[in-house]
Image (tube, rainbow, N blue to C red; front, side, top):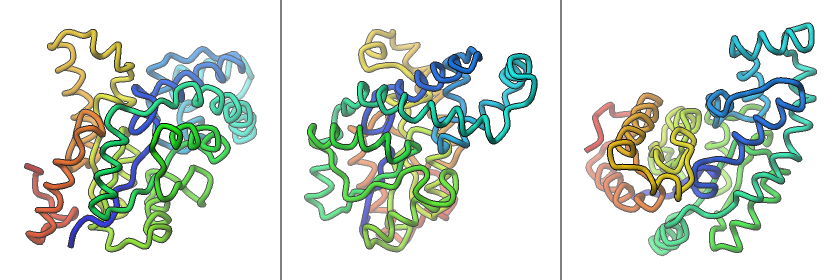
Length: 273
């Protein structure tokens, strides 16, 4: 049973090295409502659908206290909708400025296709945001066979519904023949909930949060600490493998192929080699 499909996340995985766009957008939109978020707070729930992300930010004790002081009440559903209405067009603009592909994505996608592997994608971005990002990625050479966005289905990450839609769109099965690649815990949990292999992306993603240039300027000890912390978080979420960036994916695909040939599945709780 060879791998039938690889499903990619977008920001921090195939575009926007460091996943800078969504964090910046959350900081800016909360400022419009009188609340100063830190970048670390904005990054905390990353990977969730954006309404769920906004709700999660509102439950942070410091943010909850600041919202109550500014607005005289806890953040409620109507506030979530108002923030989301402001967030979506703002993020579409910011995400378009950060839509550069992560190095190695085009080459990996081309090789997967050469092997007959379907390429899918899920994202915590909504479809209006992706209407700006998707064509920019396509012009650079990355055009997956499908796209499932937050808001397309009744629930997003960490539920498996977006993965299920990918299975249908791509006509691939069983779930154990599918690999999900993601830089956030909810995206990893999305994969494991669906019964698929989960590959975490540590260094280009939300947990490290640095551009490729910023990362290259760090000393080796600092880089190692960041890698260890990000990898630990992804493994704790259920990742079977963790890589630095998508450029490192092909050997992992081959390792999973070998495990499938040996009768292994993602449900077998055995440490990845």
